[in-house]
Image (tube, rainbow, N blue to C red):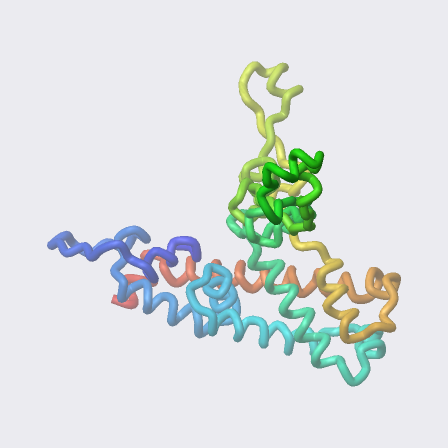
Length: 276
């Protein structure tokens, strides 16, 4: 049993009541067995489990706890160049880096963000000035006989006109998906290999490097740090801060992988027999 299979136990669709004998397969585990396995996993690898639950949206408390743990980890493992430049704002900068690193780890192909063209409204507004006119009085017959025209009694005014249209970029939804052009699969069709073999052959998507979505750019984290450290040059960020930031992102995946291996170890058949 891996971490991906535990999500259904937090939002079950129904309760299965039967007289079937108890089995040790992952799909036959009872809810109490899964909760016991999660408790044992939390005891050995609680950080990775909390990161995964926060990433899946199960617990906001686990998300905050993961960010705080990642911030403390950043304080302990930060290189000297980062500590020297941060100065007194070192704890705040590590917290900012931890938040951006966790958001990078928790991003997926199902994430959406506000359309930058319409600011999430789905509608584009075009404001312009329109000239309108009206007549103060209805021209009488004697005025017509004197050669006056209706334009002599016409008054013009400028009125603001607002035209609304659907945003062509988001098609009126106001949201854009982070999904790559490969459809979130991380695979694209290899045309040359397909023509040679005569069957569809897929390769890793070069645009997203097989992830299925576009990672948040590190420049976003740089702007977050730059707001607190205006004297931080771009060169220093690229050579000192950015590798440290990438290390924090990798640490999140390492903790999740370790929790996944611990959960598999706990839910083996012999281990579940010992628990029973």
